[in-house]
Image (cartoon, rainbow, N blue to C red; front, side, top):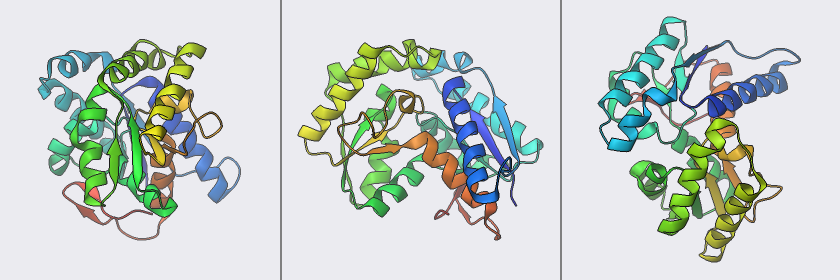
Length: 243
């Protein structure tokens, strides 16, 4: 059994990923059992100036430190339950001490299994407009739809000012539901919850579209990989394929 390392960026996303991994392990192994998990939680606030300025060297240094911490603690591979962080992780993955499981690859694998072709995408402004999902979806021939600019800024503000701080207000949940409905009207057949805090307020129960919960999917795929009795297959610093 492999040891998995969670490199948290936000507290809320990291906690949800950890709990999901433990519960997924119980489903497969029995009560109170799961793969060994080690966690790094460097404060996200140290990275925020770099995100805001677009100067990512500090972000890269902190993410590298997180991966090095879980590697020293015995992790065989890492997962980072933060979609935006993959903008930087993609640039440094092949120089990290252990391979990672890419959150967008996991989401796209699940999308393919479900037969969906056009994904609405919610997340930070950097995730919605950036290359993480544009590339991952495009390689598979899938369509990406994102909200219009005003909505993107509302979503971005809600993530940092509320969700990342553990604040869950009904009007904000309504904002996410309305935005998903707008993406549905634009042609999306599913929605990627591309910020690891969004699943705290949106699920299949209140979403106008089927959801791809990036946080929980990453944790579930990681547990399955940890339980696979075979060596990791990697390419460019990332685990290839999927469990």
